[in-house]
Image 1 (cartoon, rainbow, N blue to C red):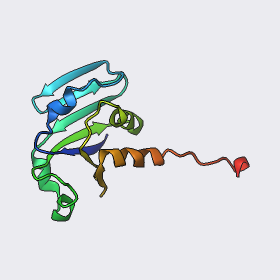
Image 2: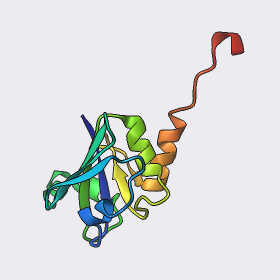
Image 3: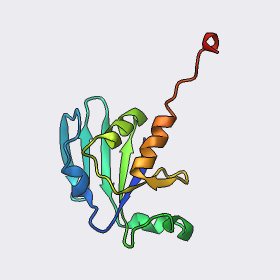
Image 4: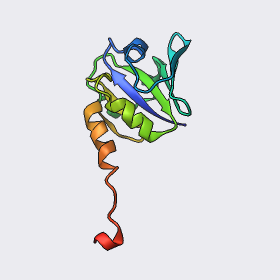
Length: 128
């Protein structure tokens, strides 16, 4: 499993994600008050709201986050392609940041662009 961290202001919570219409979903199931799963058949994505994640950040990382009282939701997934589709949905939350847990903290719109730029296919040898 892989994960990213969705970061929003003090109004951002698990209901911000739970309330959207997730494309192609089969079911959305609440597991606990602060956690739910979206089932896409063979794939699924877990969302977990945690107030303690802030304790894992170094001061210089927190300076990259523009929110006074940030809120954090872990997005746990297996398929990077599915994660990219979900984040790219027109109705997915905007105005938030994404932490890829590898040193990259960006506004969601920029993060989506970085995912798309990684998908540029390499030309075949006969196309060079």
